Length: 231
Ligand SMILES: [Zn+2]
Image (cartoon, rainbow, N blue to C red):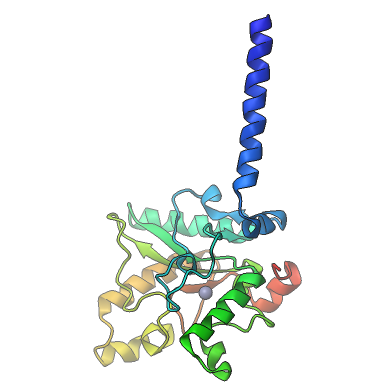
């Protein structure tokens, strides 16, 4: 009897410690998104891979802009749709996965990204060619946009013709046929992009005309009305 009581006391203590630990270990920027109802997409579908490029130095700025933000969050309905897209992909190509480069981005992180452009000495008037003006916001600021690619059964990203965040016509879905004719993109690279587009559009995401990796779950006006901006 005493032993049981002691056991319960200890396990109860261990559980409350674990809860305290897990909520304590969530960075403030992620907690802010959890508080607004956004979900960690890997909790919805652990088969989706995540590597937030702005939380590494492997991005066009060459700096870790996100810091403690390392997990991919989305509005719950967006995360559900993404999980469906991943299932469609895995049905078509067993062993393949979606790899998320960027998802929800609080407006504070949009400012960090905007300010980080100064390190590249980009003139103020040209900044919006690279990053949405934080005063207006990007669909990422509402948790309704995703940047992603496809990885094969060996975990290698498919060749999409350019890297993530390559700025120029080579990355434009609308210019693919022209780039193919000019010999700047191969048919295979376009097929790889089409595979990504196929599974994403089947679950209602919209293709971006200038970024093969970017997909919107709804228009910015709809996202603003429905969710509001993540501060
Ligand atoms: Zn994007």
